[in-house]
Length: 93
Image (cartoon, rainbow, N blue to C red; front, top):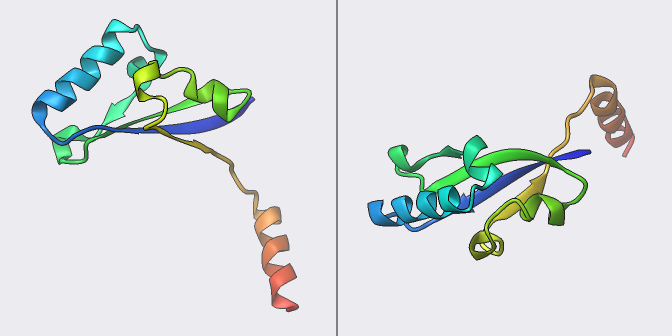
């Protein structure tokens, strides 16, 4: 299964923050139980990482009202060997 970072923006007003959280709570969304919010620091977005079979499946954890606003980014990690191969490949060019 792949890992995806979901980023959900909302309007910068305090009421918009409260509404966003309320919608997520009312839907019983898995997203909210694992989300981190930046609102207290003036960054009105929420983030969570989910495991899913596809980008669409990851997006589906969100309530329908937020699905098109959210960014869903597939995550990966690199090994030192992979990075060394990339660097050595580009040195020859």
